[in-house]
Image 1: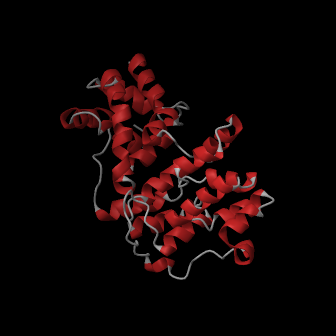
Image 2: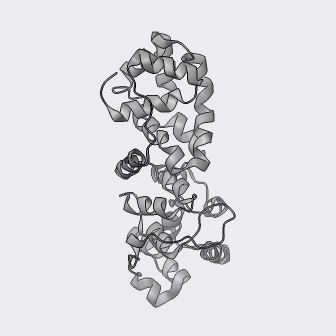
Image 3: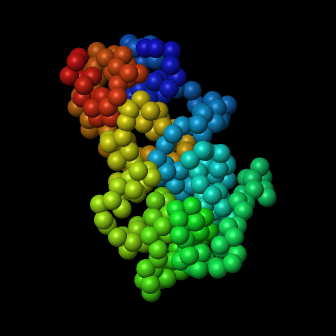
Length: 279
Protein backbone atom coordinates (compact mmCIF):
# COMPACT_ATOMS: atom_id res chain seq x y z
CA UNK A 1 0.00 0.00 0.00
CA UNK A 2 1.02 3.66 -0.20
CA UNK A 3 3.66 5.00 2.14
CA UNK A 4 1.13 6.93 4.20
CA UNK A 5 1.28 6.57 7.97
CA UNK A 6 -2.31 7.78 8.35
CA UNK A 7 -3.64 5.14 5.98
CA UNK A 8 -1.47 2.49 7.59
CA UNK A 9 -2.88 3.38 11.00
CA UNK A 10 -6.43 3.21 9.62
CA UNK A 11 -5.97 -0.21 8.01
CA UNK A 12 -4.10 -1.40 11.09
CA UNK A 13 -7.07 -0.55 13.29
CA UNK A 14 -9.34 -2.78 11.21
CA UNK A 15 -6.76 -5.57 11.21
CA UNK A 16 -6.88 -5.57 15.01
CA UNK A 17 -10.47 -6.85 14.66
CA UNK A 18 -9.47 -10.15 13.06
CA UNK A 19 -7.27 -12.96 14.32
CA UNK A 20 -3.56 -12.37 14.80
CA UNK A 21 -2.59 -15.02 12.23
CA UNK A 22 -4.89 -13.50 9.61
CA UNK A 23 -3.64 -10.00 10.36
CA UNK A 24 -0.02 -11.05 9.95
CA UNK A 25 -0.73 -12.74 6.61
CA UNK A 26 -2.64 -9.70 5.32
CA UNK A 27 0.15 -7.36 6.39
CA UNK A 28 2.62 -9.37 4.29
CA UNK A 29 0.22 -9.37 1.35
CA UNK A 30 -0.36 -5.59 1.28
CA UNK A 31 3.09 -4.54 2.47
CA UNK A 32 1.99 -3.13 5.81
CA UNK A 33 4.58 -2.99 8.57
CA UNK A 34 3.72 -4.34 12.04
CA UNK A 35 2.51 -1.67 14.46
CA UNK A 36 5.22 0.09 16.47
CA UNK A 37 4.44 0.33 20.18
CA UNK A 38 7.58 1.94 21.58
CA UNK A 39 7.08 4.88 23.98
CA UNK A 40 8.81 7.21 21.50
CA UNK A 41 6.41 6.28 18.69
CA UNK A 42 3.43 6.55 21.00
CA UNK A 43 4.42 10.06 22.09
CA UNK A 44 4.81 11.08 18.45
CA UNK A 45 1.36 9.69 17.61
CA UNK A 46 -0.22 11.49 20.57
CA UNK A 47 1.41 14.74 19.48
CA UNK A 48 0.12 14.36 15.92
CA UNK A 49 -3.36 13.59 17.24
CA UNK A 50 -3.58 17.11 18.67
CA UNK A 51 -3.78 18.39 15.09
CA UNK A 52 -6.68 16.13 14.05
CA UNK A 53 -10.17 17.56 13.59
CA UNK A 54 -12.47 15.47 15.79
CA UNK A 55 -15.99 15.78 17.25
CA UNK A 56 -16.06 17.42 20.67
CA UNK A 57 -17.25 14.18 22.27
CA UNK A 58 -13.86 12.60 21.56
CA UNK A 59 -12.19 15.23 23.70
CA UNK A 60 -14.55 14.28 26.52
CA UNK A 61 -13.73 10.57 26.14
CA UNK A 62 -10.04 11.42 26.62
CA UNK A 63 -10.79 13.59 29.65
CA UNK A 64 -12.69 10.67 31.20
CA UNK A 65 -9.34 8.91 31.62
CA UNK A 66 -8.41 11.59 34.21
CA UNK A 67 -4.80 11.40 33.11
CA UNK A 68 -2.70 14.59 33.48
CA UNK A 69 -0.66 13.86 30.35
CA UNK A 70 -3.74 13.23 28.23
CA UNK A 71 -5.39 16.33 29.67
CA UNK A 72 -2.41 18.34 28.44
CA UNK A 73 -2.95 16.92 24.95
CA UNK A 74 -6.61 17.96 25.08
CA UNK A 75 -5.60 21.43 26.28
CA UNK A 76 -3.46 21.91 23.15
CA UNK A 77 -6.18 20.70 20.78
CA UNK A 78 -7.64 23.57 18.69
CA UNK A 79 -11.17 22.29 19.35
CA UNK A 80 -10.88 22.69 23.13
CA UNK A 81 -12.92 25.60 24.48
CA UNK A 82 -12.32 27.77 27.55
CA UNK A 83 -14.73 25.75 29.69
CA UNK A 84 -12.71 22.55 29.21
CA UNK A 85 -9.40 24.36 29.73
CA UNK A 86 -10.80 25.85 32.94
CA UNK A 87 -11.81 22.38 34.12
CA UNK A 88 -8.39 20.93 33.32
CA UNK A 89 -6.46 23.53 35.33
CA UNK A 90 -8.89 23.11 38.23
CA UNK A 91 -8.25 19.36 38.22
CA UNK A 92 -11.93 18.54 37.68
CA UNK A 93 -12.47 14.76 37.29
CA UNK A 94 -14.47 13.56 34.30
CA UNK A 95 -14.40 9.79 34.80
CA UNK A 96 -17.73 8.27 35.88
CA UNK A 97 -17.95 8.10 39.65
CA UNK A 98 -14.61 9.81 40.28
CA UNK A 99 -14.45 12.61 42.84
CA UNK A 100 -10.75 13.14 43.58
CA UNK A 101 -8.92 16.01 41.94
CA UNK A 102 -6.79 15.23 38.89
CA UNK A 103 -3.16 16.43 39.09
CA UNK A 104 -2.46 19.24 36.64
CA UNK A 105 0.39 18.89 34.15
CA UNK A 106 3.22 21.29 35.17
CA UNK A 107 3.20 22.88 31.70
CA UNK A 108 -0.32 24.17 32.38
CA UNK A 109 0.44 25.93 35.65
CA UNK A 110 -1.10 29.41 35.84
CA UNK A 111 -2.84 28.91 32.49
CA UNK A 112 -6.43 29.37 33.61
CA UNK A 113 -8.61 31.28 31.11
CA UNK A 114 -9.73 34.75 32.21
CA UNK A 115 -12.94 35.07 34.23
CA UNK A 116 -15.73 36.79 32.23
CA UNK A 117 -16.78 40.22 33.49
CA UNK A 118 -20.42 39.12 33.56
CA UNK A 119 -19.55 36.40 36.08
CA UNK A 120 -17.70 38.88 38.30
CA UNK A 121 -20.68 41.23 38.24
CA UNK A 122 -23.63 38.84 38.37
CA UNK A 123 -22.38 35.44 39.57
CA UNK A 124 -22.92 32.15 37.76
CA UNK A 125 -26.70 32.06 37.31
CA UNK A 126 -26.88 35.84 36.89
CA UNK A 127 -24.34 35.78 34.06
CA UNK A 128 -26.35 33.09 32.28
CA UNK A 129 -29.61 34.99 32.74
CA UNK A 130 -28.18 38.23 31.33
CA UNK A 131 -26.66 36.56 28.22
CA UNK A 132 -28.02 38.52 25.25
CA UNK A 133 -25.83 37.07 22.51
CA UNK A 134 -24.09 33.82 21.67
CA UNK A 135 -20.76 35.30 22.72
CA UNK A 136 -22.15 36.28 26.11
CA UNK A 137 -23.79 32.89 26.43
CA UNK A 138 -20.53 31.07 25.72
CA UNK A 139 -18.61 33.29 28.15
CA UNK A 140 -21.11 32.64 30.95
CA UNK A 141 -21.30 28.92 30.14
CA UNK A 142 -17.50 28.64 30.34
CA UNK A 143 -17.76 29.08 34.12
CA UNK A 144 -19.85 25.91 34.50
CA UNK A 145 -17.23 23.19 35.04
CA UNK A 146 -17.89 21.41 38.34
CA UNK A 147 -20.64 18.81 38.75
CA UNK A 148 -22.15 20.91 41.52
CA UNK A 149 -22.30 23.88 39.13
CA UNK A 150 -24.18 21.84 36.55
CA UNK A 151 -26.71 20.97 39.27
CA UNK A 152 -27.09 24.66 40.17
CA UNK A 153 -27.76 25.46 36.51
CA UNK A 154 -30.34 22.69 36.19
CA UNK A 155 -32.18 23.92 39.28
CA UNK A 156 -32.12 27.53 38.08
CA UNK A 157 -33.55 26.51 34.72
CA UNK A 158 -36.34 24.55 36.41
CA UNK A 159 -37.23 27.58 38.53
CA UNK A 160 -37.26 29.88 35.50
CA UNK A 161 -36.04 28.86 32.02
CA UNK A 162 -32.66 30.31 31.11
CA UNK A 163 -32.38 32.53 28.00
CA UNK A 164 -31.98 30.79 24.66
CA UNK A 165 -28.35 31.80 24.18
CA UNK A 166 -27.38 30.41 27.57
CA UNK A 167 -29.22 27.14 26.93
CA UNK A 168 -27.63 26.86 23.51
CA UNK A 169 -24.10 27.52 24.78
CA UNK A 170 -24.50 24.93 27.54
CA UNK A 171 -26.22 22.24 25.47
CA UNK A 172 -23.61 22.15 22.69
CA UNK A 173 -20.90 21.27 25.19
CA UNK A 174 -20.00 17.59 25.11
CA UNK A 175 -19.82 17.51 28.92
CA UNK A 176 -23.35 18.87 29.38
CA UNK A 177 -25.24 16.23 31.42
CA UNK A 178 -27.70 14.43 29.09
CA UNK A 179 -30.55 15.00 31.56
CA UNK A 180 -29.97 18.76 31.47
CA UNK A 181 -29.75 18.79 27.68
CA UNK A 182 -33.10 16.98 27.56
CA UNK A 183 -34.49 19.48 30.06
CA UNK A 184 -33.52 22.30 27.70
CA UNK A 185 -35.74 20.83 24.97
CA UNK A 186 -35.81 18.48 22.00
CA UNK A 187 -36.79 20.75 19.09
CA UNK A 188 -35.41 19.59 15.73
CA UNK A 189 -33.32 22.74 15.25
CA UNK A 190 -31.98 22.39 18.78
CA UNK A 191 -30.90 18.79 18.13
CA UNK A 192 -29.29 19.84 14.85
CA UNK A 193 -27.15 22.43 16.65
CA UNK A 194 -26.02 19.80 19.14
CA UNK A 195 -24.97 17.45 16.32
CA UNK A 196 -23.18 20.27 14.51
CA UNK A 197 -21.18 20.92 17.66
CA UNK A 198 -19.81 17.37 17.52
CA UNK A 199 -21.81 15.88 20.39
CA UNK A 200 -22.17 12.15 19.69
CA UNK A 201 -25.15 10.89 21.65
CA UNK A 202 -24.51 7.42 20.18
CA UNK A 203 -20.98 7.37 21.58
CA UNK A 204 -17.98 5.67 19.94
CA UNK A 205 -20.21 3.28 17.98
CA UNK A 206 -21.84 6.26 16.26
CA UNK A 207 -18.47 7.79 15.45
CA UNK A 208 -17.13 4.51 14.04
CA UNK A 209 -20.12 3.75 11.85
CA UNK A 210 -21.71 7.06 10.85
CA UNK A 211 -18.84 9.51 10.38
CA UNK A 212 -16.40 9.90 7.53
CA UNK A 213 -14.25 9.94 5.62
CA UNK A 214 -13.33 6.46 6.75
CA UNK A 215 -9.56 6.99 6.69
CA UNK A 216 -9.79 9.94 9.06
CA UNK A 217 -12.16 8.20 11.49
CA UNK A 218 -10.16 4.98 11.55
CA UNK A 219 -6.90 6.86 12.05
CA UNK A 220 -8.37 8.59 15.10
CA UNK A 221 -9.74 5.30 16.43
CA UNK A 222 -6.36 3.62 15.92
CA UNK A 223 -5.08 5.82 18.77
CA UNK A 224 -8.00 4.91 21.01
CA UNK A 225 -5.96 2.47 23.10
CA UNK A 226 -3.63 5.37 23.94
CA UNK A 227 -6.11 8.22 24.17
CA UNK A 228 -9.47 6.80 25.31
CA UNK A 229 -9.01 3.09 26.15
CA UNK A 230 -12.21 2.94 28.23
CA UNK A 231 -14.26 3.96 25.18
CA UNK A 232 -12.54 2.48 22.13
CA UNK A 233 -13.91 -1.04 22.65
CA UNK A 234 -17.42 0.15 21.79
CA UNK A 235 -16.14 1.35 18.40
CA UNK A 236 -14.36 -1.96 17.82
CA UNK A 237 -17.48 -3.93 18.68
CA UNK A 238 -19.53 -1.87 16.24
CA UNK A 239 -17.17 -2.58 13.33
CA UNK A 240 -16.01 -6.12 14.11
CA UNK A 241 -18.99 -8.02 12.60
CA UNK A 242 -18.75 -6.04 9.34
CA UNK A 243 -15.01 -6.62 9.06
CA UNK A 244 -15.36 -10.34 9.66
CA UNK A 245 -18.30 -10.72 7.27
CA UNK A 246 -16.96 -8.67 4.35
CA UNK A 247 -13.18 -8.94 4.71
CA UNK A 248 -12.39 -11.79 7.08
CA UNK A 249 -9.31 -13.70 5.96
CA UNK A 250 -9.69 -12.73 2.28
CA UNK A 251 -6.35 -11.20 1.36
CA UNK A 252 -7.66 -9.78 -1.91
CA UNK A 253 -10.43 -7.92 -0.10
CA UNK A 254 -7.90 -6.37 2.25
CA UNK A 255 -5.72 -5.41 -0.72
CA UNK A 256 -8.67 -3.64 -2.33
CA UNK A 257 -9.41 -1.84 0.93
CA UNK A 258 -5.80 -0.64 1.15
CA UNK A 259 -6.06 0.73 -2.40
CA UNK A 260 -9.38 2.47 -1.78
CA UNK A 261 -8.87 3.97 1.64
CA UNK A 262 -6.95 7.14 0.71
CA UNK A 263 -9.63 8.43 -1.68
CA UNK A 264 -12.80 6.90 -0.22
CA UNK A 265 -15.24 9.57 0.98
CA UNK A 266 -17.81 7.36 2.71
CA UNK A 267 -17.82 6.03 6.25
CA UNK A 268 -16.02 2.94 7.55
CA UNK A 269 -18.90 0.43 7.07
CA UNK A 270 -19.30 1.61 3.47
CA UNK A 271 -15.58 1.21 2.88
CA UNK A 272 -15.54 -2.31 4.30
CA UNK A 273 -18.60 -3.43 2.32
CA UNK A 274 -17.30 -1.87 -0.89
CA UNK A 275 -13.88 -3.50 -0.59
CA UNK A 276 -15.48 -6.88 0.05
CA UNK A 277 -17.83 -6.51 -2.93
CA UNK A 278 -15.08 -5.38 -5.33
CA UNK A 279 -12.85 -8.29 -4.33
